[in-house]
Length: 61
Image 1 (tube, one colour):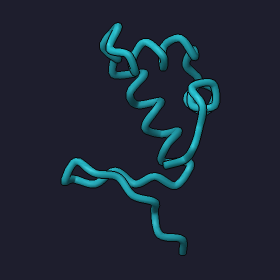
Image 2 (image 1 turned 30 degrees about the vertical axis):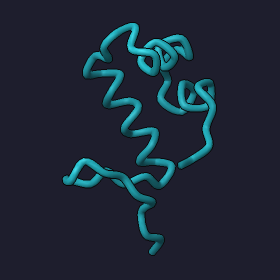
Image 3 (image 1 turned 120 degrees about the horizontal axis):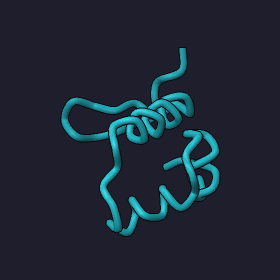
């Protein structure tokens, strides 16, 4: 949706790129702090998490 690379997401979330890669391939489970950092990075980029297990771009105001 954003077209970010693993590196771009890692930098925005202040986590290691390898951490993102490991999550994507299921090599390890994310810890709460990493999930929170990733969520904040995505929300800062305009992604809205929906209660129905979905995402969308946040409407511009």
